[in-house]
Length: 244
Image (cartoon, rainbow, N blue to C red; front, top):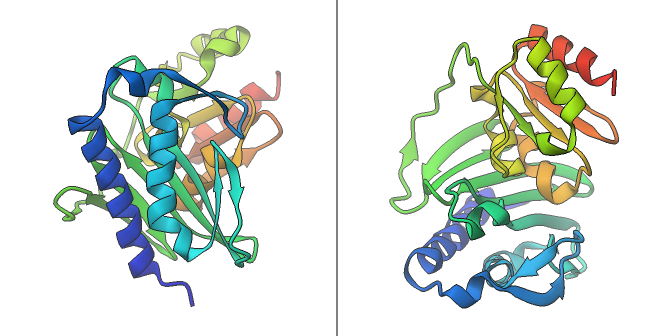
């Protein structure tokens, strides 16, 4: 049996250590590009490598690590742990406080847990089996889990690459933001009209959030991912993207 309790504690400790490093030990050198190209194809900052090493330290004993920066670290386990050690790294390096981490757990090719942490607010949202929770990683106190009942703002990650689609959203009077941290946006889909993620859909970006929001309306093809809690919004945005 997978030990949810021990794993969750390890995820909290990894995020807490990274939070502490960012807020007390980080230097300008950590924001410089390394010589490494991440497994996901993006240029890697020094802070990406530091964050990844922290997560490997805490989580590698639970199974195989599959990370955005180095790819797979094999322990020959039936448990695969998919991590994005710094979601929204461009936001982070620019001082925009919307960035975090993402961890998903897969057992025998089936997702069994998902964790997304907002490192700017120190809040971790996670799902173990059937229960979704929020916890403050610093105090380790559980937080009230509430939803905005009638959100009027949507999220469109990578909107800058789809000008014709943004025009279509404008025609339908849909207000949206494009904050630049896919896992954070997707994980909090309950509080938005919808979350639309466009472009290359990588497991690091979406796995944890898909598990967290599995009971919501979800549509995914090769280029788009939609998550929303309202069926009417789901049909509307699904019909709009079919034109592209």
